[in-house]
Amino acid sequence: MRVAIVHYWFVGMRGGEKVIEALCELFPQADIFTHVYRPDAVSPVIRRHKVSTSFISRLPAAYRLYKSYLPLMPMALENLDLRGYDLVISSESGPAKGIVPPADAVHICYCHSPMRYIWNMFHDYRERSGFLTRMMMPPIAHYIRNWDAASASRVDHFVSNSKTVARRVQSYYRRDSDVIFPPVDTAAFRPVETSELEDYYLMVGELVSYKRPDLAVEAFNRTGRKLVIIGGGEMFAKVKAMAGPTVSVLGPQPFSALQHHYARCRALVFPGEEDFGIVPVEAMASGRPVIAYGRGGATETVIADRTGVFFQTQSVEAIIDAIERLEKTDIDPSAITAHAAGFGKEVFTEKMRAYVERRVHEKSTQA
Image (cartoon, rainbow, N blue to C red; front, side, top):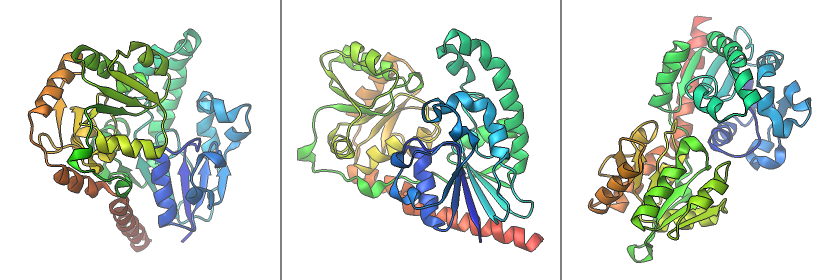
C-alpha cells in the first residue's frame, strides 16, 4: 500500500508534528507532502522520509513568511501530484486536506482544528493585526473559507483530536468525525517523591494572547504565590514586564528543565482554551494536578477534583478561587499519573492503526 502524508508546514516540532512523527513510525514507507520544510527543525524520524514541497517553499523568505502566502495555498495543494497512492492522510490545522486525492484512494483527515484564523478565532487574529492586514483579512478569509468548506468533500473520513474539534468539524464542514486523541510521550515524564516537591506553580506554553498568560501573572501578583512561566512568543516582553517579585518568566527551556519543573511544581496553571492541550497531559504524567479553564480540550483530559480543578470564567478572581480550591483538595499523584497514561503514544498508534485498517477494508469491499 502506497501511503502519502500531507502536513501544512514543518518549521518546528509542536503537537501537529508529533502526530506526523507517530504516523511516520506507523507507516515507515510513507511519502510526505507539505508547503514548507525545514529539515533542521524536525525530528530524525520525519527526516528519514521522502518529503516533497509545494511551490510555496520556492517563494521569497518562505521559511519566515509562509503564513503570508495563505491565499496561494489552495492552488499549491491542488498542484501536488498524488497519483498512485492508495492511502492519503492529511494533517489539518493549516491548509492540508485540500489536495486532490486519487479517486480510488482512501483519504483520511486528522484534524487538529479547522483553520483557526478563518473560523473560530478569525476576529481574535484580526483584532491583533496591523492596519493593512485588518483591511485584507475579510476578503481573503471569505475566499479561503469557501474553498476550505468545499474541499472537505474530498475527505472520505475525518478524525478529530478531541470532541471540541469534532464539534467544529460538524459546525464548519457539516461532517461527522471520529475522535482519537493525539499522542503524548507520557513515558518521558515521571513523578518525584513528595519530599522533592517545591512551593511554586507552573505555566508552560507559547506566550500568545489566547492562552491568557496575563491572567495567570496578575493572579499570582495579587496573591504573592510563586509562579514559574516557561515559554517564548509574541507576549514574552509584556509578560516579563507584568511579572511581580514572585513570578519568574524563564523563556524557552530545554526538555530536561521542563521535566524538572513539571515534576516539582504544586500544580500546572492552564488559563487558555485549547483544541486538545498536550501540556496538561504532560503535567499529569508527572503526577501533578492541573488548574484549567473549563472549556476546550482540557475538559476531556482533566477530571475535576481527581486530577485537577476547573474555573469557569477567564478572570483573575476565578483563577485565584481555583488555586484556593485546589489547595484544599486531596489529590493522589499516582492516580493522576495512571490517568495520563491513557493518552500515551502507544494508545494513539494502536487506535490509528485499527482505524486506518477498518477504513481501507471498507473501501476495498465497496470496489
